[in-house]
Length: 121
Image 1 (cartoon, rainbow, N blue to C red):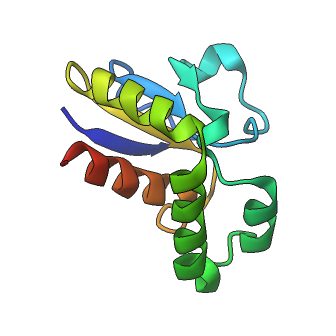
Image 2 (image 1 turned 60 degrees about the vertical axis):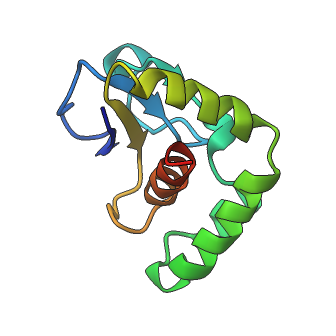
């Protein structure tokens, strides 16, 4: 099984996987029923300060990625998150949902890499 990324505003590509919203803020205009989530892991999203600093500026992405990984390494919630994803990915695909318009410069991309590195250990 694998970890996939999907923008929450698009029609679900895979409704059978374990769908996890990895944004700290709930996406505007999306109802909780229509989101079809298994889990809203808001604590795994970047801190408010980091998110505001980044402001979806692709030129800041490399530095944002470093700072976000540092937050993940220091957060108490990260261990719980990693263990849950490890359990779920054994039996089904895990889909990280995010709201950002930029599909290559967002925290879900970084989080996917972070989790995949953990799973390879």
